[in-house]
Length: 441
Image (cartoon, rainbow, N blue to C red; front, side):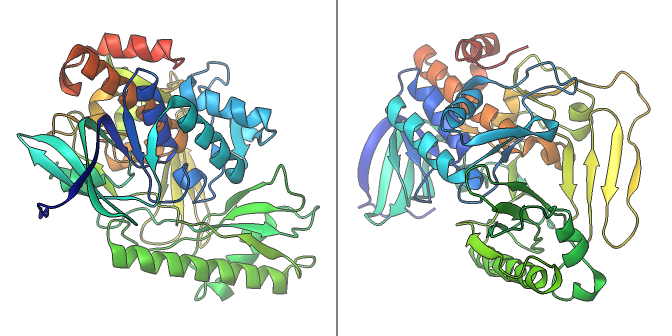
């Protein structure tokens, strides 16, 4: 780490949250509601991360596998309620919430402003200052140059574990991560044309040299007529922690979108006049760094619904692993089903377990948010401590949001009790989360 001695101190606060995704917003708002002075840093010009800049406009089910037990609430529920007031969200199959990404930007702005959180857009966390295994400040870079923000406690919501990496916390990164996806909003979509026509058309073998085999899903806009959101690209060999590789991924993603649009215009009657309504400001990253924390959640623990005394979040979204080396992906469901989906060969449906007493939902332990080294740092979002299989489920937004709110509440309690996250009384944390509206079992 090289820090110039003349770096100006911009501010000194209680908490710095790096990363203004929905996870980071949850963290910042939760902490501010507990009276902390909070600074939220975001590299884009708005909050929301993949939900806004990535155009990924679906939050998965808030219920257990029984479709009756509400397992996710808190700030996530508040955000969805505000979107409902704006008629900017609807519920579809599997209890998924499909929202308007542009409206999400406005709603998240309101949450941050009302909570009194300080914020900086177009700002990168570039490094940290560490002393005695504590972060003393985060070095930022933006149009004002390089500056330093000091704080008592820090939350890494960058998605890539940037603060943890800068602070030399133990991390892991797969050599072949799940490939990212470039989404697109398509205008002038024929009203009566099913989205199912897209994979049947574009993933044909004759287009294989132009378009890698992928997995297509999408949604219909609530506010704009004849517009859909499509996720159908797959960008292999992209490392989100490497600037050159990430830049390649952005160009390759847009190239694949262009191929899809051109094929549809040429091959599908009624699609001659479809248009590109919007491209994302940032490619949809699935996987990069994960910390090796005080507890590493395994896929077996998750799928079997292991209970944790320090559980701070819950989920029912399936384990979802996009194959890094080629065609297809694998789903593991809590009800015991396993599904392998391919375009080059027949799908395979079997079971990963023969147990009949399968889990209704899984749990996220607070310890998985805590790096093994830096005592005043918590990690929220997809960079928490888990193995690759557990990561396939924990990485989705409704799960990441809960880790953000938990980290924000923990920060407030740590400063109030003059302690550190690893020494925090978990029953106090769980009780305070419940008071903030989170579901705690």
